Image 1 (cartoon, rainbow, N blue to C red):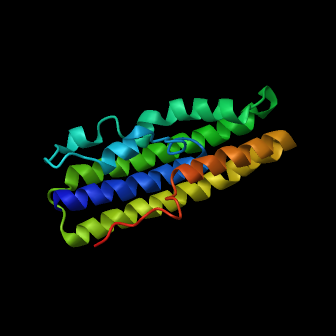
Image 2 (cartoon, one colour):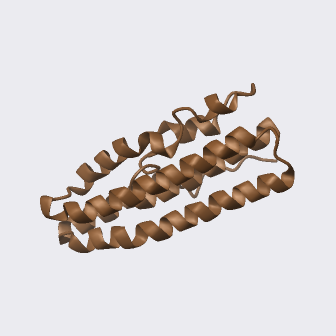
Image 3 (cartoon, rainbow, N blue to C red):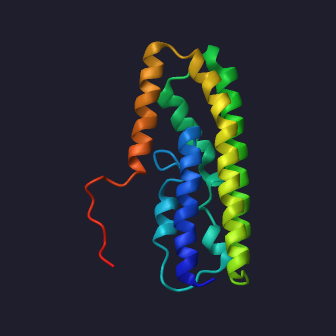
Length: 176
């Protein structure tokens, strides 16, 4: 796969991982993959070794920090800790799965055929969808324990996270 294709994949993969975590409220969130998403999308033109390309830029690397931020922003109470723990565990599992797939893809990038590339991308998107499906019920259980004020706050927090990752509707598109 060419370096340019690898950059595009990383940008797309980062968005998938971010949305998984945004939803999960964990990583990708308010940048949950944090600056790593931007870093992947802005890789230097020179080829980067696979190990260096994924170092410190994976969802798993930031999940604990992001969970702590989300815990504080959602104002989780002691009574809500069991539901929070289930959500956090599902988020960690999702971050590990996505990180493993991104690492595998990066390590195989130079030897992938076009078909291999599509299969790898399919694996990544399937894992993302599966991760979101698993996060929904555990987040719902947590959300159901929240006070009306906490729910309103959660709606705002998640809305801001989504707005952070969505292009502005009036943003100018690059001309071909």
